[in-house]
Amino acid sequence: MKVRIFADAARASRAVARLVARQLEVQPASVLGLPTGRTSVAVYKELVRIGPDFSRARTFNLDEFVGLPAQNRRSFHAFMDRHLLCRVNIPAGHVHFLDGAADDLDAECARFERAIAAAGGMDLVVLGIGANGHIGFNEPGTTLFARTHRARLTAATRRANAGLFAGRPSKVPREALSMGMGTILAARAIVLIATGRSKARAITAMFSGRITPSLPASFLQLHPDTTLVLDRAASRGL
Image (cartoon, rainbow, N blue to C red):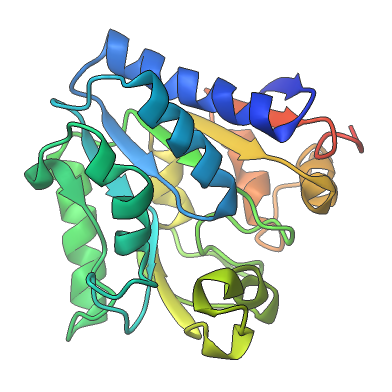
């Protein structure tokens, strides 16, 4: 893994935005995997500012809450519209989300996998990381799902997402749909951004040499083209 460390979160976010912009410059028809969450907001703000051409790009979002339709303001679909998709020149037909309100969630996960395959796979996936080492909604456990699946969220993850629900973890859905680690690792390149002291332990554990489902992020060690972009606080254990 390549590691780039910046003085603060703002500089780290700008660096990730530049990496995405560079990907679109070199390969305008890139297929991107995109995250949600607080860390991604600054990345998307910078992307909007520098204005790369998204007109030929296609995007797949990593995850979505179960039970929330796209038009719900707390959905990740709505989050992406607010922070990026409605502010860049990407055609609506090039944007792909999981439908957390689908009648058959297993069929929805299979449909999403087929859509990624039909697009030729992902050229670049951008990731955040949870304080417990989760990636997307691949939570720590004794096993991991390789492909897009229905995930049970931990209490820590629900607390981390409470900002979308008026700060009330009890209102955060207990389940979500998420790309699996195998789907993520099939991307041709991966960029992970981590900022803040709360992420330092998970980042340090990634370098222990162990690959274990109890730390989903550890599987990124298997990928041949992974870049970690950190601020000093997140890198303090390295």
